[in-house]
Amino acid sequence: MPKPETKFWHELKRITPQIRWTRLENTSVFGTPDLLGYNNNQHFFTVELKVTRGNSVRFSPHQIAFHKLHPKNSFIMVKHLGPCSVKLYEGSRIMELVAWGLKLDALCLGLEACRLKLYQLGA
Image (cartoon, rainbow, N blue to C red; front, side):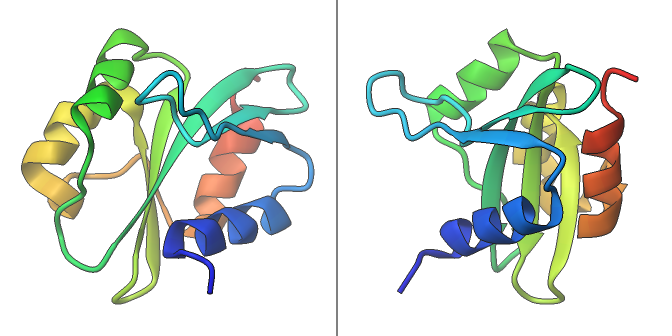
């Protein structure tokens, strides 16, 4: 049975056919985000996928370091399994996300709004 983040990845991939995705399953550089995206505006960006049952979102110290070192064009997409909501955050806000969890105001709410935001990057 696939992990929740794998299911989330397949769902995102299915609804974003205009984004060319590279899944980064990197075991040599810890903290590297899950996805490298390239949209029709010729814009590269990274996305860290997280799935949670509660309010908090867990990150490794390496993931936190990555987003602190690469605050631009990096995003964190969180799926809450309770009400099935999806939220998108800028990577530069990782410390706030660690502190506040899903109470932090998101850049986008809902999978469709997140899809549109990623399509529009670099426009």
